[in-house]
Image 1 (tube, rainbow, N blue to C red):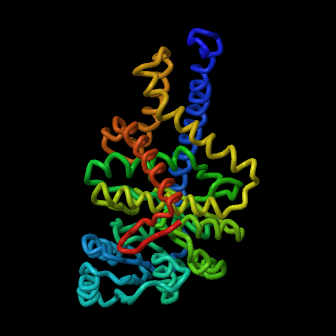
Image 2: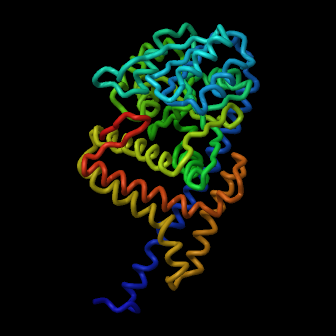
Image 3: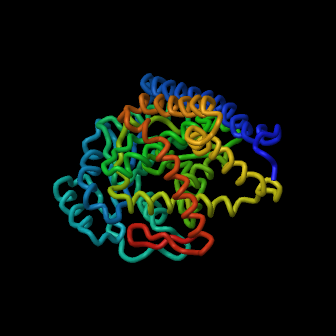
Length: 394
């Protein structure tokens, strides 16, 4: 056994810092660049003077009785001159159907479609619902949005203006995430606001540079002719992450994709309990794992990528906190933790979240790790995730 005071042991203890500090520097550069892009995109959209096209707003809804009325009402009250709203009730069993029928009686311009039974073989539920809605749409732009969203009165106008200003065929947005329970407050914003702004290259995504493609299904504004030309949701019918897969289809077909700040456009309340948070993000991770397994990477790339990601994650979110308690290099650990929390504070300030989100960032990071490991175990044991009454397998 190597004594702890040898130079080799000292070098080993320093190794996490040699990874963490450069990573924090790179993430800082990425975060600042992303925030600048989001601000520039919003300003460009405010100056757009192009004619406003007809927009079809498409809402798939399954067991959304608690949110469907507020969502649909916010869409019907848009300050936009040429639009239609279509909602598909996807076999709801909780009273969503009755709510939609009441809304249709109150708002004759609303179109409600009642679906019966499960989607056809090979389709996931949401993709088939979106496909069904798109077939009925008459707009030259299609806005796919979730039934748990709440839109500002200029949501569509601002979205169309930014899509036109950026000359993009698919525009998606980060909504403001409304949270209630402690698990939501800790995890939801960290996963959906902080991690993407640290890891994605939003300007590169818009320019079509090589790299990861991302989108958010809570707000997907697609040019209808392009959407149909690439096969629409039929082309991604089997995947769990239809938003990511659709964005990849647009990019692979040579069209522009943009991801912008949606806080001025809409808010979303995704989950209402710890169980929903756990199952919802498990479903998303399961879809991400399944998508990765279908991509054809070289064997050498597959072997080193996962361990490297795990090591980097540990260097940022696990080892510094451990060193602060039991390590000898507490000063470096304190610098790393302070730097990481400063990045979180910058995002919290930008998206107007409570300051407590900064303090709970370590808990969120460890929670993400726990969900990831549990989802990997489910995938290994071939266990399904049940979401809104439907099973999802890897």
